[in-house]
Length: 237
Ligand SMILES: Nc1ncnc2c1ncn2[C@@H]1O[C@H](COP(=O)(O)OP(=O)(O)OP(=O)(O)O)[C@@H](O)[C@H]1O
Ligand SMILES: [Mg+2]
Image 1 (cartoon, rainbow, N blue to C red):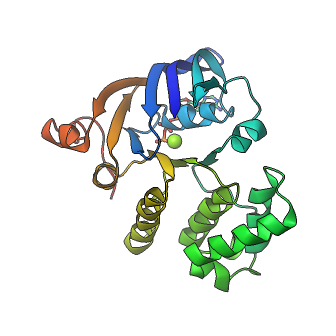
Image 2 (cartoon, rainbow, N blue to C red):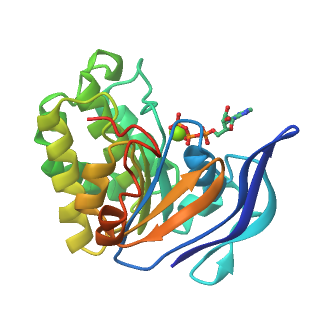
Image 3 (tube, helix red, strand yellow):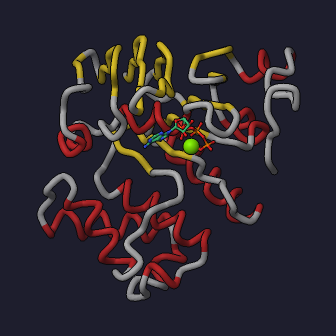
């Protein structure tokens, strides 16, 4: 479904991503693991046209997307929940969600249908639909960020550190949701510092070190070879 081939990302003279290749098949949950600064966010951001690709290609369903605008990529069914869950703090929960739908120009009727769907997935957001997003707890803001991304009806969701800074019960809720949505046919590419959690959830994982893929395989392979032990990076949580 998504193929990243020999991707490099430069920020000025700094090459943050070095010839990374990875693939996500429809229906999979794929994890990208690695230390702080390894280049994980840069890979996800490049898929949405949000980080400067200096070499390589990115294809969705066999068609190049690496020269498209972010809006065009979202319209094709790929979306990103960025690191740090950037919600619009001065807007309400419902307004934040509507903006997710407007990213692909959905009309109001369609958007309202999706709003009910998001509120059924996250009852806590339904209770707070008129509350300003900036006053939500961290966990509720992460739910809102995921909900807003789902409003564009993506087929493939890129999630950047969904568990960061959240209490264990909220992390469980969010990962249960990811597993539930996968059963409904959604596909996920997931960046996670909590390697244990990621390996419990994913079908396959990639380990990124210093901007390059250092290992890839099933969770069992990662565990058997202690690929995410503390010698490689400190897993949080
Ligand atoms: N906009 C930018 N301008 C300059 N350098 C950047 C920019 N974004 C990222 N970098 C650099 O690129 C490298 C990779 O950063 P990136 O955010 O992709 O890593 P990461 O694996 O997501 O790290 P973390 O786990 O801390 O989120 C880092 O050295 C970072 O300083
Ligand atoms: Mg990051």
